[in-house]
Image 1 (cartoon, rainbow, N blue to C red):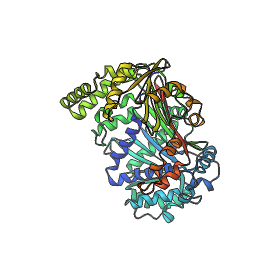
Image 2: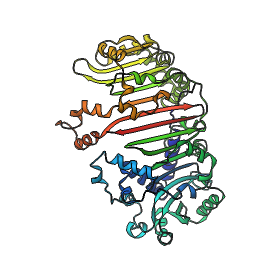
Image 3: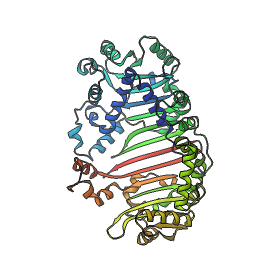
Image 4: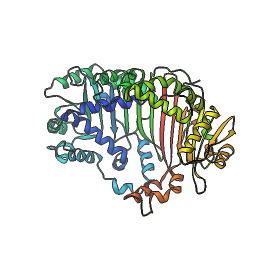
Length: 514
């Protein structure tokens, strides 16, 4: 039985922390800002530049010019595989208004460059004269351990080049604006911070001894992840954690999180297209094994066919019990022992349960929360379906009903478990009506939910239809709501799954279109 997945987000934390820490030095921050701005542009409008590119997607990647000692890495690929380009077209065709914002002749590199200039960076660099003649379609940023660097890591920027001669001519101006040094290596310009050539020389020498692309752990992680997509990132949590911890929380991360980075393994993520859909996929290797928590999320497939949103967790009770000591320690550190103890006691007395015992008992091995919309007569259609302690579930639901303005919770048996709802009619509907797993939108948004240990589903189209007056068309709707409603018209659903396999795990977030 696979263990429960622990979505700690450590990989993203280290990458963000390293970026923020290096960004405290204004000139170093510009190195990070360059890739950060491009990444944001691509996430919002990927595909516009594909229209005039050949469907090749070949050539070296940024990791081929970074040293194997790199502990965190992110890249943007505006020239991905042919399949990704075709799928990008299919995705963008679902949004007719997209071409008005990012057309076939839009240069996303220029958009990113101008965004940086508007924030006060690269002020003396002219895009058409100093950048466009040589800048390629791929770029990446890595963080390399360096004891001489202020924060123990040095950001290294790899910019794809289309013309080596032009790059050597214009790079000095870019390097000066970035507050560092740049050098052409193969099909990339490698830049790093520093007022002398020494830091860059050290990076180049380390790369000659071995590249990130050749590192066994990186290769394994990216192979397990699959298609790179248009944006991807990788971080070795244990190695990056040593540097993040050395910052003493200066990047704004809670110390309780920093102490557990060594257990988080290595994380690889990719933003990619899949047919007419957009997917954020992630794979984690080397996670410290946690006690197995039996349970699955197949209940989500048996919900009513017209479900608008649902979240299902397998083995939630055991996972909560295992995580409670760490969670309690973090909360005590955040609010103080006295305040935490008093607050917890107040919650236990008000609700009538004990923490963590009753909470774990209520969660059980199968725990699902489902939302079916708003009934004009009875109000929100919300229910909990699970195999946990029915008495505790009733106690919590009664308390919630009281906070919501009175009433009581309704409990009924269902499929070897219990349904607790605020409306008896909806409780009966959840207990007797099925079919969500057979709906095309659900199957498109959630791949293999029967194997997952965490699953979530949102029927965007259904929610937009039910709450259309709140999104657009009403006098009280906010400015720009019509544009938002127009975009929602082309979206179908959102699906999230997470699965653990011993010391590794996978997660997937899918946004589907009609």
